[in-house]
Image 1: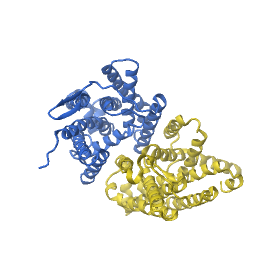
Image 2: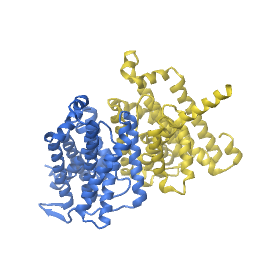
Image 3: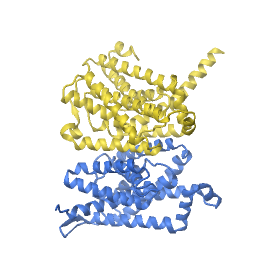
Image 4: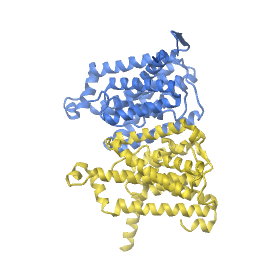
Length: 296
Length: 283
């Protein structure tokens, strides 16, 4: 995956891999929220917010791409922090759907405020990091791998890992053990918002164009939920893998554009009913099986 | 003194009543079946397009609408039994599952009917004019029928035997089972009733707007906000909140710009939700 684009020098394949990495960051940011039971059905809100912010700073105010990406991330992190005040009063479905409402409001606002945001047309002419496709690829891949390692460490290898699990399994019991649940939910929300923002900002600078779709529930939240379900939630690596699978399938089924989303929707529905845990669970089982077989 | 045009008030009241009916299906399923049905917008979409389909094949407008509503109810029951019921205790999974179902519905409609905008024939044609007010007859009919349907539902839940069983199931499942109430059947019927009401709101409201495959998301989000800000499980709460939302929408549309109407309504419900998490008329 690291050497192939350089060896093959295939711009199209490289483009698909770059886009996969962007979505992988976004999918992981959705998953980190799931670690403390904060299912979001409006995660495109953070992605799109950062994408628009980066696009505006870069295209309208001519801010350097790196600086506009960083401000996109910073603003979404602060917005995530601010949202915790009203949103932490909500749980479960209320939380998930209030997020969806936020994404819907943001989409409507962007369409309504067309003087600044370009309405349905969106914003064009964003300056990319570099015009060299390999350069772009390695930048995005590097950021994606760094995010993967960071989020995986936080969620699975650090002292937070067990705390998250305790909060998820039984919040009351966790509280009785002296865990300040609120603090860890906040950590996940800010991380989830910031990394979704990172994904959105990279999306804007890489594709050099944004439109209201990046904020909309369909397709953007739909994609991230599908990636998470296909890959397997509560694993960080699973949703990233799911992102690669979905983006590749997307390209593969370019001819059948009509039925793509239907196919993913159905596939994710079936996986949810019959293989809860996603692909990663079965993949790791297979790896376990073969590594054990070799030892014997 | 600023004179408030009667037109704006009536616009708000009529659309508000329709919003109330839109929300009632979600509210009913949310409070009785205890699942958050993210496919609410999908059922709304199906209602509108089925009515469109039946009109296309030459059925009369009222018959087409009635058939569409019944069919949405049946589809709701089947979908619930096959997909949702087996995993109903896993709340997060139900939420994601119904979300995915909505996407599947949307794509099925997109493939079957194409992505173009379509128009649904109204139940009644013509425009009412008088007293300085101009309003399409369909809008008036839709609002009146919405209020009637919501009142009927309220009466049904309060008075009928089945309604009592539904309330019993909501309050105490184990006691309901002890009294011989088939809880699964109640869930099935309530889900079907909820989706049929959603279909009814779709066939009444859709002629006022246009039909397109992604048309279900806005009513879904609207319904959700109206349901929880009005008070979960409160039939009158949904209607009252629907009217408040509709009036906000109408006034902001009139005094600022149409595109800001819905946004203002959403912000208002968000504020209500933060100040009063149990909702306006919730316990």
